[in-house]
Image (tube, rainbow, N blue to C red):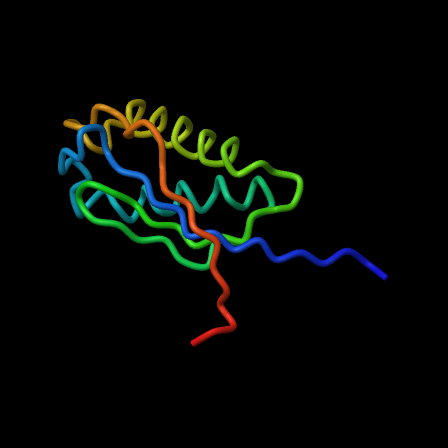
Length: 108
């Protein structure tokens, strides 16, 4: 028998002090960048979206990853990318912490 896991998480994290700095034109590139991080870590990204002050991800977390390490990586890498490419000029960083909730997609 091969190994099967399904670790579905709804992850939410916001901008520092919830300042609305994630302007609409830059969100799509941000979401694509985060999708790339998920792929590199063998996580399946079901959905990503957000508004001007926070982001939502629905992912299947790879069993070799710790949730806290994954979120830390996403936040650090995306922050570095946004600074480097000046995607959101007013962005000062992500809030400390995050929300993560397990979910079951079989219920509707």
